[in-house]
Image (tube, rainbow, N blue to C red; front, side, top):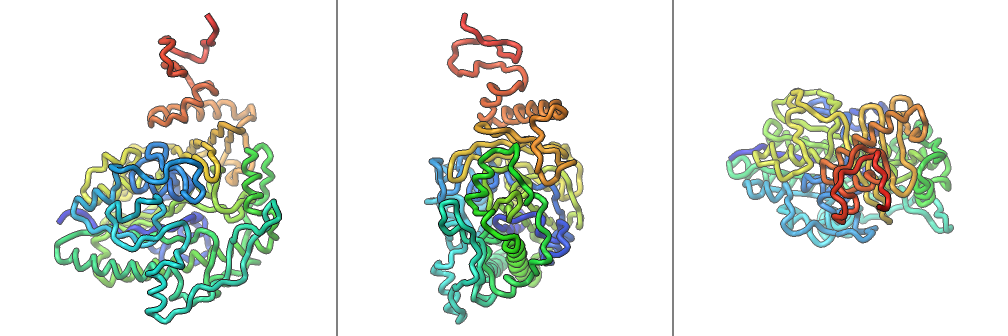
Amino acid sequence: MTGRNILFLMTDQHRVDSLGAYGNTAAETPALDALAASGTRFDRWFTPTAICTPARASLLTGQAPFRHKLLANHERNVGYIEDLPDGQFAFSSALREAGYNCGLLGKWHAGTKRTAADFGFDGPHFDGWHNAIDHEDYLAYLEEHGLPPYEISDRIRGVLPNGGPGNLLAARLHQPVEATFEYYLATRTIEMLERYADDYRSGRRPFFLALHFFGPHLPYIVPSEYFDRFDPEQIELPVSMLETFAGKPPVQRNYSAHWAFDSLTVEQSRKLIAVSWGYITLIDEQIARVMAALERLGLVDDTAVFFTCDHGEFTGSHRLHDKGPAMYEDIYRTPGIVRIPGAPAGQVRDEFVSLLDCTATILELAGVDPTPATDSRSLVPLVAGDSPEWPDDIVCEFHGHQFPYPQRMLRNERYKLVVNPESVNELYDLGLDPDELQNVYELPEYGAIRQRMLERLYRLLQERGDNFSHWMTAMYPVGGVDYDPSFGGFDDAAYTPERTLVHE
């Protein structure tokens, strides 16, 4: 038997600044803080795209969204494909072929018709983006344990531009913690872990086991002990709530209206942040249960553990909720923790890494060829404490949610460039403006930086084969062009910024 056991813990729509390990002194996340203390915390961990389905498909395949082409959530699909094609590489299928048990409990959301089972995962299938409170297995669990059904009150929502009720943002859940969907998922995970442990100890199979919580994705629906756990008056509102949208793409103001931010009071905004922290504490406690089971089963020294999420959440930052067509740190920079037995404990790495890099890491830990994970790079050397050559920037992308909206982002240590073809581009000086309130793209003093970043993004997109680069070819001075941008074969001369096309 070869390959290491892997436990993969994943949340949905999770702010990096909601964890104690990432500097939140008021939050209560002891289980995840302990994992960070015993492993490696990555401070520059990004999602390839801040939307559930494309990000999860990237984790599954090790390919950037533009390559696997599953670009939107099916609930708000804008005409893109809704499932990965037959024959698409997936790390889970490769692990199955290598003799692994593979299980996934919780959120799938990486396709419409093709389920986790189609990619080699054990476990019940859950459709959609939210807790599946009507799922037959969950209802059977409640009945088996004599637990009450789902019931909520104290709803928090705004008012939409058309005068209708806004999206539900939070509510009080009238169930004990044992009846919550989070507790249920952790219970089922522990049960599967026990079965897989028997297989592993008998020498038959190592395992990959994923627990994908649906939270803390809004709406934040939690029992009273978590709904009221944090005092809203003690919540410090994010600086970016001062957002005016001046000099920003107009779509951001529209999205703010869609999420009815300005119809909420300051007190409601504080309460939402407080309840989101309560939700995260609830999830942390369930992770603690799973980690305790791992120790009880004697698997700690044989099992690599990951914790991350698919993307972040605004929770009022930039007068926004949820996620969308705005490439701010709130939704692109996420938590990422990896513990590999035998590796140094308590490390903090500042390399630019991605959710995408989990795929090659998983494959390497399993002793499987990571080559098919085209856009993924193994984190094993970083976790081991080595200093391999590593890029000093990262590219992220977005393709739309509810309507097509292509974006590309280049982020380095100090600056962030966002190219928005239908609107104004963005450049942020994160050294002077960490809250990303001032778009300095047009300021003359940033001209040289803007030019360098445009050229760098263009080169990286071309190297990856991302056709977004063709827009940049035509619209910006990004260097010599050695092909006919029309793709018509009409002209075989080299194209340069100095050469103007004229009728001959």
